Length: 424
Ligand code: GDP
Image 1 (cartoon, rainbow, N blue to C red):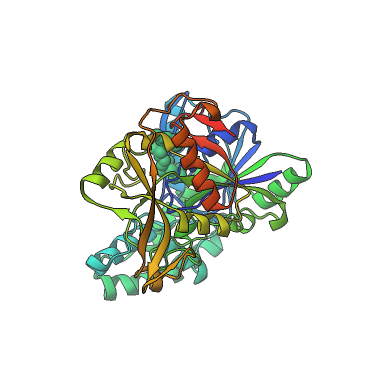
Image 2 (image 1 turned 135 degrees about the horizontal axis):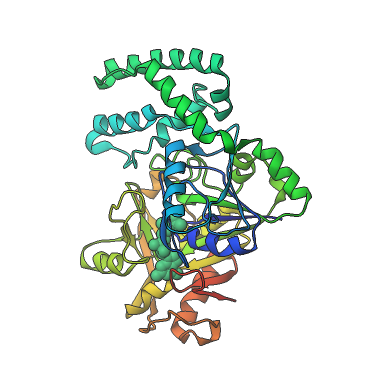
């Protein structure tokens, strides 16, 4: 059976924790999009980890971790992460890398920095991991697939061809030093030797695993609102964050994805620029940021303070719908125990009209939040294992959100740990 864990919001919903939890009953965990630009924070029996490229299932002995063809594959990032977890006592994970995955090149990272510099104040808030230049090259058909590392003739010719183009832009647009093709080729030889033991046809591997009845978990990065088609374009990421894309980014039939576990955060947070209707500021935001997540809401990759806001039912319902959510995991609910009242954004007022439908970005920029206020529960709910034991106002908040989402909330996460979960 194939399941997906994906985000309904702007990312940082706590997908890593849910994936780590569901890893227990999975044979294979697959990354199918994105790269090392965002991170998952995982707290388990080995300690606390920030993963960027490895799937969040690497902590189990029985799982195989797959880097799918849809990923922006940074070879050094993978190896640094493996080194880090192994040095902290985690058994060496079983890793497979798609022979069709494309490689994040050193110049992608540079181009990301140079472009942000060039844009100055109008930048997209990139994490500067090379993701946008990477996907641009993929679709311009000048990217490097992993299999090309193993054909010296193809590799050499392509390095020269690509350097010619890149150097032209480096010189004339960015006024930066040129790439030396020989040095780049040496780097790619290093990459080849690092990755060689793990490369295979992962699509064939996964399709065979499906036939054998294995449990496969697709792990999404970021959330619906960062999807290049359905998110807050252009302040989005460069690969699809939707579960449907899991079929493409992993190389399996779309109809095999049976369960889409959509992670929804009990309040809102976002990193980088872009429309954010229920955003809050000042002391109110500082307090939520300080109390949020596990030790504050700061980016796992960049350490940047996240933007904060109240729960947005309009964005989250849309987030679930576009994912095709079959069930919802509501996370970080424990954080809200300090509030007297909880504002929930139930509508957007645009040009004097209230809507419950999530609009395109041009309209979104005019939207003002319409709030409904729910009473707080004013207690710490960490450690509670049974739904009935949650305070009444807390259950009311969950049930209100469930009604707004129009999808069943089957799991409530009340702490960062693997076992901080309430099943309904
Ligand atoms: P992801 O990218 O969706 O995996 O999200 P992140 O890992 O970047 O952000 C989620 C943060 O919240 C991490 O620091 C998690 O450890 C933490 N977290 C996850 N679930 C919960 C929860 O239910 N309660 C609390 N307090 N923290 C949580």
